[in-house]
Length: 311
Image (tube, rainbow, N blue to C red):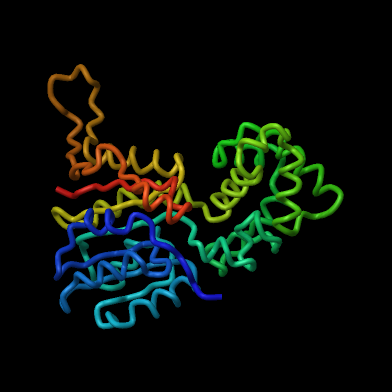
């Protein structure tokens, strides 16, 4: 299966990076190389792009896509949380721009073997890095009822989380839950019919929650942003595309804290904590796709882009 993925908010992200032709850029979630290709087009032979992804299929696709810029591209199979170590290993102290596109690629969703989609019947997997041992099946069959409930409530923001968890635990007592269809049917049975008629696919939120848990997506994001901002050159920028409210909230909060890190009580006449601003939030409100983009690519609908510039 070919790696296909329509890059979201492409022009807005590339414009937001303010690319310097001789600069060094990092695409922390390179996917099929959509954003990276446009970055490379603007780089001089002195410029450099480091592409990171934990998905081997994505890296193979990016390598092919970027082969005309081979002399200025370095690809690394890793999680973007290892960003600092990767730069150290390459002897790079600071970079001029970073892109994170946090969406699951269309390839991952559409590839039956990867187990991300509730629309296909396949083994329950959902690992972005197939070298990892923990799968969606391990979570669904091994977590306690409370932990499944907490995960679906917090990461899926599903008001039927308690009932879904109860149904999952009851079903797995009879036989292990091994496929995406089995799981989708169980979740469907836990949500009232009248809600299903208006609320989209009943399994959507639970599948999102399990995917986030399998890949530890929110913790990775939370723990990476400060150090990424730290490694930007003056006037360097980080552009982050999120696809749901939990990710967006983390990015918004982290950017705000880096712009104004002061922890002094509001009634203090002067700052005594000594924490200095790292830069400014460029996007007071997130940039969202145009009506045209949303029409052409339905998967872009929930995307939001936020940008921070280092001082």
